[in-house]
Amino acid sequence: MTLLPTVLAIGIGATIGASLRYYLTQFMNATMGSAFPYGTLSANIIGSFLAGILVVVVIEKAALNEVYRLMLLIGLTGSLTTMSTLSWESVEMISLGHYGQAGINISFNVVLSLIAAGSGVALTRYFLSN
Image (cartoon, rainbow, N blue to C red; front, side, top):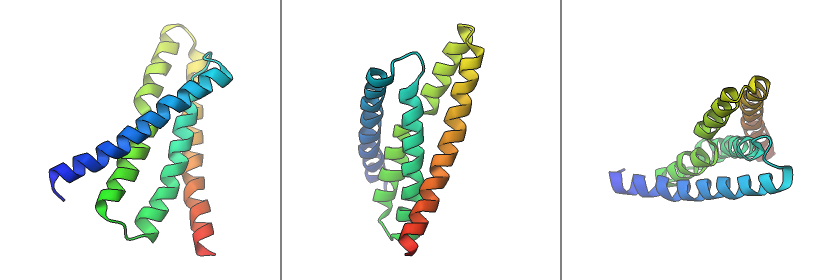
């Protein structure tokens, strides 16, 4: 695959994923408040779950063109989930002396995202095998 189609595929997926993350964060802040970064947490959990589903559907079950694989797995889920925002929010909490809150933030994001990705894989394999 050449450079331009690769960049375009990833860019289209990234645009959608980043937009979803932005609006999800806005929704979570409006719903839950901004005392804890629920938007980032929910984006990471949802994105990881979606990535788990897509790994099974796109890589294991469907013979999709590489363009779609790049768009969905790298572009969409890569920009929906956000390690950089998790890191920045956690560093900000630490700098304000909120060590416990930072620890909870990091732990919840990592553990729940791993559970979500594993659940996405397991559920998709289960439903596609029946």
